[in-house]
Amino acid sequence: MSRRISDLKVATIPVEGMVCLSCAASIKRAVKKVDGVSDAEIDFVRRSLRVTYAAGHALLLSKVTTAIDGLGYKAGPPVLEQ
Image (cartoon, rainbow, N blue to C red):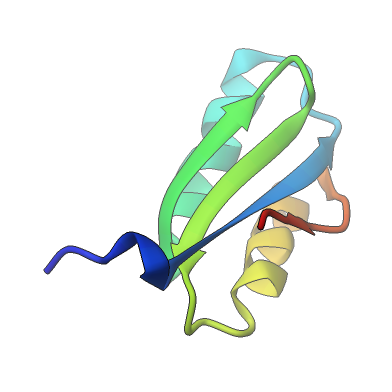
């Protein structure tokens, strides 16, 4: 079942401690496992993660930041896109 664009939200989360492409791949894998995440893209240059997720998942961003922190990186506050 595919989601409509209006059912999805996007947030950018700064990530401290990401120093290599292997780090970025680990973060992306972990975040994509969080229930409700549709997509996760790393911007290695800006040291951030852009996550697309289902609109109805209220606590999802805290789960995403917990997943990032659990890998030993530091997730900053999410910035919601309009």
